Image (tube, rainbow, N blue to C red; front, side, top):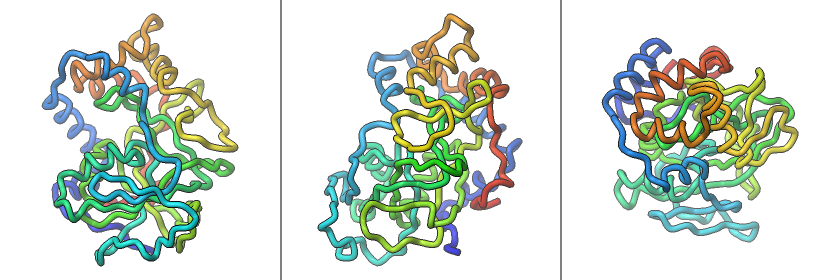
Length: 285
């Protein structure tokens, strides 16, 4: 089976290899270091807009410019350089060209080209993670769900791009899953394995049931399906009390990211389907 992409940063490799108590301590240190600021109107709009705008078609991104791809395009003729590429499932912000471009802006200009294939992820669902991200949303994570087919992307990334993206996915481990799980819209040779980010915080639940993110279309979804604002409303009640709302959650985390670590996560722990490393093939573990 395809090997994991190499991690070109030893500190990042060390983070991925941490067990859960070690990672929890690191998260506390990071939360205290990041601080915060007063919330602006745009912050609330951004949180509710997660996972943000993305094309419904496959695309080639060259230094932030998006070229849409269709059935008439021969993907084998695309110039992607000679470096090996690794198939990385994108179901959250990494599928949004604006976010993807910003994350890869740390690389040299000639190292930012990415092919993004749209398609269906079979046997999995994309649900809310049990943590509040620094931008205020409950972001996405992947869970097994035998009958579900969910819309997702597949990024073909270099080792350098994979390392850059993984640095930004602080709350996530890297899992390898069978390549047959992803069916692209366009003709493409299926890899024997694909890779995905799995939340180390586990999945948020309501009355014991996962919460599918309505912004990420799926068929045969067997759980709740909510807009981001309603997901945050439910989390707000658990964290801050029955009168709290999504706005309160976003305000708190923007004001001080440590609040997400020290207040929100413990409050959500009782309604979390926990992350179980033994259920996944994980990079570094």
